[in-house]
Length: 223
Image (cartoon, rainbow, N blue to C red; front, side, top):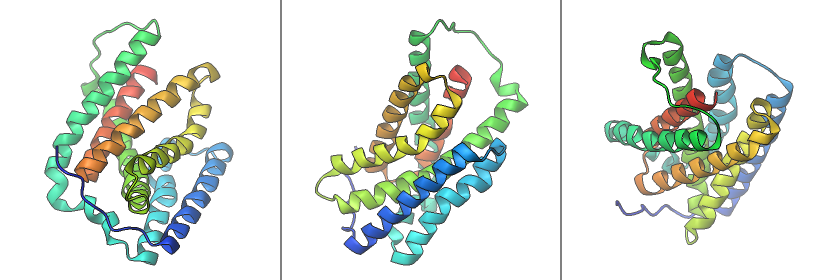
């Protein structure tokens, strides 16, 4: 397994800006989720671009933190795509098994790949993976790893907490109350997995693809 790349330690002033941006984004995101209702295509294009890309852009421009973009180097594209398919397949398999053993579902063959709806949903999943990787891992986790350079576990736990907190509003809106605990568990496991992949690979393309594949597995089996 590749060794972890040591990141420069974060400036306390920069970390204060980070906390401010993440907190403000979370508040606005909760209001957006509960008070406004737009089509999925709008959420995955305009909505998440505003909420996830904008604060990342503000932080990079205010601090000149080029390290946040290193995981997006074009040289990492090909290995990232291949690794993403592998890791996403593992996440999707775990999600499928979890659904199978916690419900009365049956395994049946379905011609998913010849469905136009499938490919539309997969495109939306790729957009979700892109925006959320940019915000939660390229931005949030990278800054946390810099701030807690001597305590990687604390950085990952905070990143997982932030990831899950942002996803709770949508979980409450989409699922019955009795199903929420299972969804939270899956979100935690996924966030831990993505954080560890990012920690050792430093490749955002890997996370985009694994996120998209995982999301499609949840859509097919739990949607």
